[in-house]
Length: 236
Length: 236
DNA sequence: TAGTGGTCTAGACCACGGT
DNA sequence: CCGTGGTCTAGACCACTAA
Image (cartoon, rainbow over all chains, first blue to last red; front, side, top):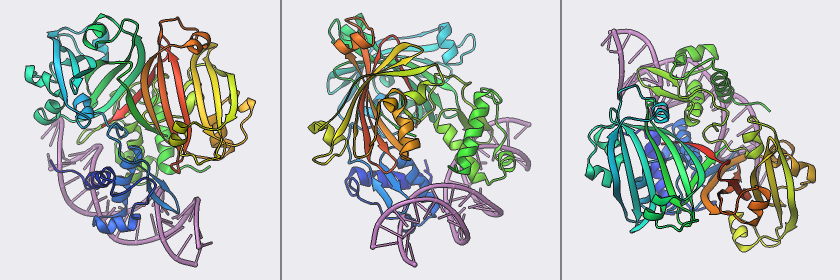
């Protein structure tokens, strides 16, 4: 899998920031130096820097230079990335999952609309608890069209559906729309997230798209209020 | 205030999608046609389209074309934008604010760190309820350094601090880091958000930066669970 | 005035999808 | 094969900051 030059450069600089080769509020080499160093053109350097800017890792000042916005923090999820639970949390601790239920069924009307399904199209219905270092962190209700994601099995569900999708099926992820709300906890939350009766939960309801614009996941992800939190970076 | 050509083009196409000139899953004109239409170069067109892609408004397929991802929805907040409460909600309904308290004080240690303040620097301490069509929608606790945002007054607080910052002070917004959690409601929530005793609230804790990398706002924004929701689009 | 990042261009070549 | 979007280049000019 060959990456674009601007991606390689962005990854390289991001890693240097992570390893503190470049530190907070210190300047990066200027664009001309980077152009020479990476043996490329200035536009390509700017494209790489723009990714890091969107991720909230650097900022630029016209007439002055390019600076590191924040030191590395493993809990900080850069900018626009969303790679699923495993990808997000595996750098923080040990990640594993328990399947509460798994089924293939017909979608409800609302689900048909959200996932843009035609009649006769079935969906996977997956309920999982996901653990970080042995502690329950999220309860996930996931719906995926069988036509887009075939061949799911127990092993995949206990690990990462996302790595199956990208590595085995060769699909590419696109955008994700995520809606955040607070909710009262229900019986499943009490049981699987081990939370108390009046504890609230954070619910993230999301529709995730492939890069061809097709929605392939509708899920509700519930975090207990005293543990879960989702951080997002926005840029104007 | 002269905008870049790629911004003008992105705005134009975004407005056309909003007005349904381009509809869901219909192709946009191809890049060569857009290049001619806007009398520009292909790279500039691609830059404009990339903005809309990040906003989750379009998707592209190599070898096929560029397509509209979703029809216009006033509740959908495009991609990376964060322009504060007024900007986000004024297109949905009537927006106004009530000041619960306003003070200038010394920052606490945690606040000094988050806002990168030196000794002797004071902060505005603002508590407001913000209404959408007369209904309380959010309770906001906001801290801003007096040195960066001077000259606040009652009228500004009752309207939009953000428009004061961008229009009057001439500052430019940069990235924002937002952390979402669920919380139990407290006495202020009960009083000002008119929520019940065991109702949860959605809390968004955020640090907002200027485009020069300086943080200028630390705020906690609380939404009642049955009304508030924040939608964000991520892209991989 | 010198040095920085921001924008823009014309043109080249590549990767992919459908015919 | 053709038409689509994706990447990349070299070079130009502009806008802004600091000395």
